[in-house]
Amino acid sequence: YYNQDTFLYLNGAFVRAADAKMDLYSQSLHYGYAVFEGIRAYRTESGETRIFKATEHYDRLANSARLVNLPYRFDNKTLIDATYELLEMNMLQDAYIRPVVFAPANMSFLPNTDSNITIQVWEMQPFLGDRLLRVMSSSFERPNPRGFHIEAKASGHYVNSLLASQEAKAKGFDEALLSDMNGFIAEGPGANMFFERDGKLYTPSAGNILPGITRATVLEICAAEGIAVEEGKFKMSELKTADAAFFCGTAAEVIGWESIDNYQFPKPWAQTLSAHVQKVYKSWVTEKSTATISQ
Ligand code: PMP
Image (cartoon, rainbow, N blue to C red):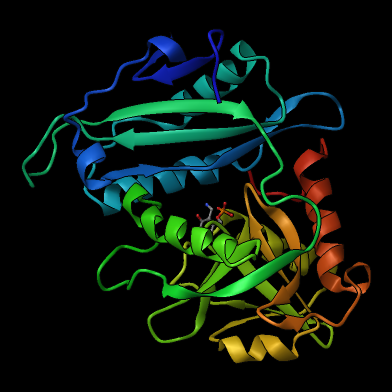
């Protein structure tokens, strides 16, 4: 992720990653009490660097902080300008961007009066690869929204994601799919999902999932391309009559599935509407014109 020449952003300053310091008494380290974002920058067709949906991501960061009572004294313009500058300093165009808001030293359960922000950038490696994924329905459920603000992208929630992903890989799958506490399909450890049946797309409705920015983009693509899509509550068993399915997320982009558990999706990926959505997504993130994209 970094070497001697890498810079990161820390509380208003650009610092060499190797020299950056964090307080080991931070409440964030001890309790997983931090919020973060996963954002992506692309080299557009015209050669410029563009952060895809930067405002949506920094708005979600602010909202995540608010939901878990972390003070947030940063504004979007400062952070977005700093992110572009950081990309340039690190000579990156196709990059992953990771802002983290974290707490100061505090071993009590009392709220904080201040917080810290770091932004880190690194070269984007293929997240789940380009081949179709073999997905496993997880033995872990997503956190119960009555116990967490599930719509906050909070660091501690990701222990659940790590466990589910590690379990799937240990069993020979590529990735996990988790249910919510009522047994309805929720999402992957780091991505939302859609499935396709008879020329229509379906996706779990908001409420028990992270409201993904890519999910919203896929809904925009469906509207623009005249693809029917329905949000609702779906059981795992419904996947076993689907033609195709995919994960979508900032890092994952749109990535098709080969199978769920022992069920192989019957329709050749290239012939699905899902594959068309994947193509349109790839063009939206890199095209110069942003006319059709809310930024
Ligand atoms: N669900 C979870 C649990 C995630 O971690 C992510 C990645 N941020 C997503 C969904 C997809 O969100 P987005 O499209 O905003 O990256």
